Image (cartoon, rainbow, N blue to C red; front, side, top):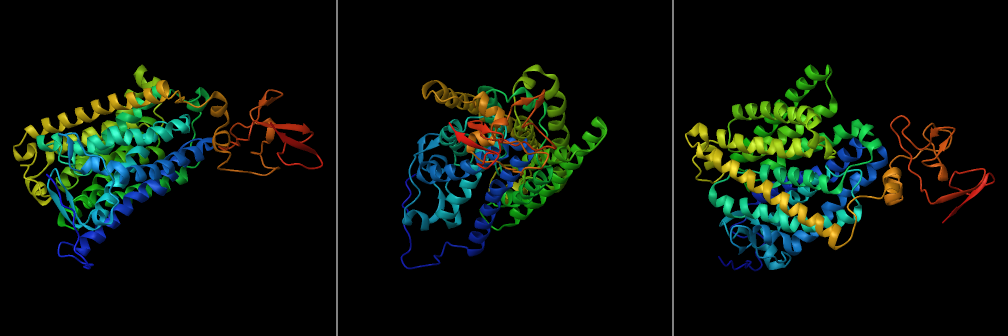
Amino acid sequence: MSINYTVQEQNPKPDWLDTGDNAWQLTAATLVGLQSVPGLMILYAGIVKSKWAINSAFMAFYAFAAVLICWVIWGYKIAFGEPMIPGLAGIPGPALSMEYELTQAILPTSGITAAFPMSTMVYFQFVFAAITLILTAGALLGRMNFLAWIIYVPLWLTFSYCVVAYSIWGGGYLAVLGTLDYSGGYVIHVASGTAGFVAAWWVGPRLDADRQDNRPSNISNVLIGAGILWLGWNGFNGGDPYAASTDAGVAVLNTNICTAMSMLCWTMCDYFYYGKPSAIGAVNGMITGLVAITPGAGFIAGWSAIAIGLGSGVVPWASMNILGKKVAFMRSVDDVLGVFHTHLVAGTLGGCATGLFATTSGSAAFGLTTPGGAIEGNGVQVGYQIAGALFVVAWNVVWTSLILCFIKYVLRIPLRMSEEALLVGDYHCHGEEAYVFGEGTSAYVSGGLRGKEIQGLPLGEEKGGIIMGKNPSLEVVGGSASGSSGPAGETKRD
């Protein structure tokens, strides 16, 4: 299908433009962008040990910027452009000309149009692509070589995300098959959960000491990031009808119902199994609820949102706290934030539940002719959902592995940081620290003493949850190791 992208000259408001839809779409896109920057940056920095706070937030910050440039130069048209590989990918190319950006939004393979310009569509789809890479990073915190991450991001975007997005959202073969994914339960969450877990296996684990003592540096910041993530999901699911429509309202309400139910169920599971509720556990329950509702947010009724929330609060909890701790292979893979459980398991659960609970009226409100799910007598929809999940998992296992092998064996770039970098953390990687304290405080450790032992006491380790990572290349001369020259001594750099 060849599309002629033209604009109406000297017409600031063409006939096809609905200013309300355009305003909502840009607002929804901004809400999703805020989930990544600063939402997940804050959450990641708070949930890791303080010596990894900067590196973890920076992985997200870098990915957000890198994905945008790749997206507008070639990625968007692979995911949503005219077909190149039937059913799998569009023709890569830029989405940067003024004529293209001003014309009416259209997805050429599926024939879907929207009452806002292509520029709005390109940006809206970008924020979904960006958060997928950032979610993948959650499995790799605290040890992935940053240079390897720099290269991994554009490669995985191109060969994994864009293909899965085209196959489901861009009019590809899963869309033709009938797989339902309202807002990214498969495209984003099953993909990121699979890729994160596979990448964690290839990269290798953190230091044993970091795995055994992985106390978060700032749980208050984790809760702040989680709050941004939750409310940002109103744009995540509410923006996917491509209109300020009745179905957008249904999607927003169902998203919040399911999330609340899931968080409560996870908290109760923690309480009965461990004897006390956990704030970090509640955040996990919130995330699994958000993930599980995403495939069917506007297709299902409110009662079904409660049922899905019950499942997403219990099944991923059991997967993480029982299966993840008792199965040797699961323990051997250092999936730092448990994205296998919170995204792959929850996303698959939500996708299959969509096959059960999708309604005919909800599908019609979204603009589909799908006759609902099993509750509407269309039991085969469950099979379509399972087929979609299997494809996304298989595609990501293969391509994540190929990309990481290319980086490691062809480019000869280590996937994992050096042992020295793993011991020191942010200061070794970036020359910066998240938390800095002056002399006289209990957390202060200076210069060349970083990581040393005096009378059996390890310096530079955790003191009250704070780690001071100082540059190990600083050599101490004289009586002081403060890192600044003065009467007590001086420092020199190798």
